[in-house]
Length: 274
Image (cartoon, rainbow, N blue to C red; front, side, top):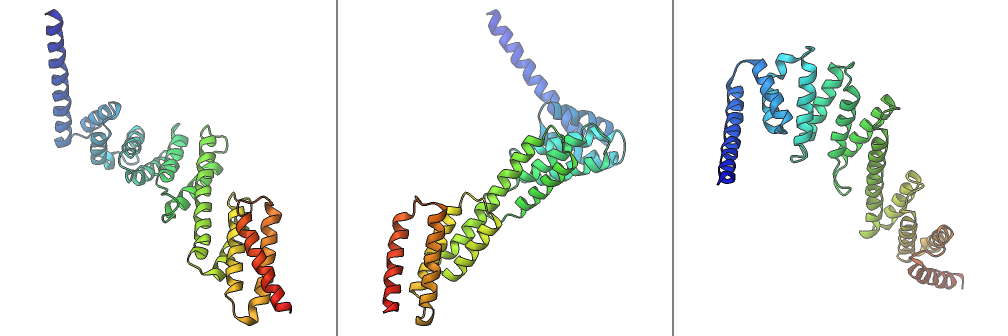
């Protein structure tokens, strides 16, 4: 019986606390007192109620612009946006902006390095999958490079380097898929050029075996479908591309297909030489 009563009292206490918290928040929203709004916003922030904290910070931010008291406010405001963005990705745009604003407004703050990193990380979070437009990926790489240059001894450097590596790999995959795409749509002349450019831009790419094969396949298709005047020259180019693939990886996963195409190339060259 005593335990049941204690449970009821605890339940009533929790409900009362929740109502008090909601009531205080509603009062703060309607209040014209910036200090009171600040106090309640800080409470919401500390409780992890970031959406409510953001609403209050938005209302009082102009009153604290450029003021020393604003340092903690703008840090909490940016952090609230960053935390809220974990559930609402577009908030990362605003979080990045507010962190940048914090860095510019409080360059001597002990939190400036963290803010600069989180601004960069917010932009990194906006980078889409490789198949989509990569504007935000390029922006994130630029910001990461600026951060690395500005804070070479930062505690965040390992994470920053890892993020930069991931973003560059994403751009590399995007570039490869675009180059390979010309082969897929049977624009073989463009495929050869695009795959060449891809390998020049990314000489150490893990897609090199694939790129060499599709360059060979494209040059082969271009040769066997060519006008008579260009056939011999293009068959020679295709044969050279076969050799490049085998030099790079003699046991290539494409060996069977490549050998079959080479046999056809040699057959066609023999016909021409007779």
